[in-house]
Amino acid sequence: MTVHRDDGLPARVRLVEVGPRDGLQNEKALVPTDVKVGLIDRLSDAGFSAVEATSFVSPKWVPQLADAAEVMRRIRRKPGVHYPVLVPNMKGFEGALAAHADEIAVFVAASESFSQRNINCSIAESLARAAPVFAAAAQHGIRVRGYISCVLGCPYEGDVAATAVRDVAAALRDLGAYEVSLGDTIGTGTAGKTRALIRTVAERVPVAMLAGHFHDTYGQALANVYASLAEGVAVFDCSVSGLGGCPYAKGATGNVASEDVVYLLQGLGIDCGVDLTRLREAGAYISRALDREPVSRVARALNAKSPLPATTESA
Ligand code: HMG
Ligand code: MG
Image 1: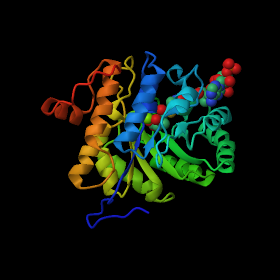
Image 2: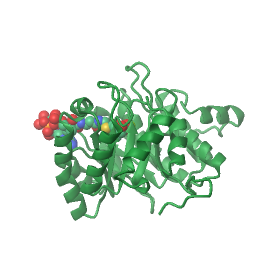
Image 3: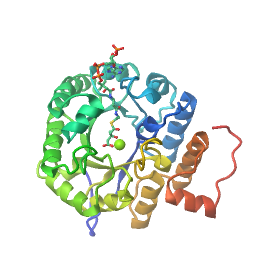
Image 4: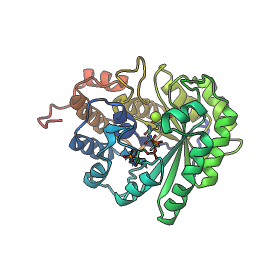
């Protein structure tokens, strides 16, 4: 149960590190499996209790994650840490089951056009497709997280009604989702819209079941995290080093950087269990492998002020 302090903010926050999935899925150049495994292991060592590891989706749609089974076989599973994987259909569920996934994430959209482009079917069809996945997961004792995309805007339709998000969230809850993550896929949301969205969704799904998933395309993600905290949300998805975004899609960026969220929470005196130095090390590891600077402002500032020890290991 979420405990709230006198100031209304949650006393503790759970962070779901999604960089290995949401971040890497957008990388055009194939990242070697051992680098993905190295990243996931470093993230669990940094203290995340959930690291979204990969997706069991069609390799034709997301070639980067075609090595999902191998990643799951090779990661070092830390007791107490969940390694959710994305699953779009029963074929994906079977892959996740064979890989001994302990949690799966099912994704649907709040906008019809996005649903068609992302998973090639309508919202209603995606919920119908999800039903047997929920049933099979329940049979195998695997918990299911629900994602909703485009909750604060759609690249094809523009504004998305908060009531539409609310109703999809309720449908996911009814199917058996233990948590519903609200995805601002294109990062157009602002703090005011975020607060209004959470209030509307909470008409049908308790805030304690909601998570925030903010992409930072417009630089609003951290403000949206704070706005959500003020509404009592205590679970956030974030991406190490701000991984994500397509190098070929102008302006698209990744999730809010994990380092920035941890720094924000530390400043608020909210415990999240993540060690910022070890997180920076994980960020440095993947940044070296991708040959780029971390997107995280906090990582950049801290690296400039107190450089991490040089490492001889190759990325
Ligand atoms: P489709 O083409 O309509 O499906 O794709 P299909 O059933 O006709 O199958 C086509 C081919 O894919 C077949 O192979 C299937 O076997 C294969 P073929 O016979 O042609 O050789 N296939 C699969 N292979 C492996 N694993 C599977 C699987 N399913 C079918 N699970 C489908 C429909 C949903 C599969 C496809 O559209 C897909 O995989 N989409 C993935 C989209 C995706 O991963 N998007 C990114 C994740 S969502 C996201 O990032 C948003 C989020 O972060 C929140 C936010 O930011 O808002 C979560
Ligand atoms: Mg996302």
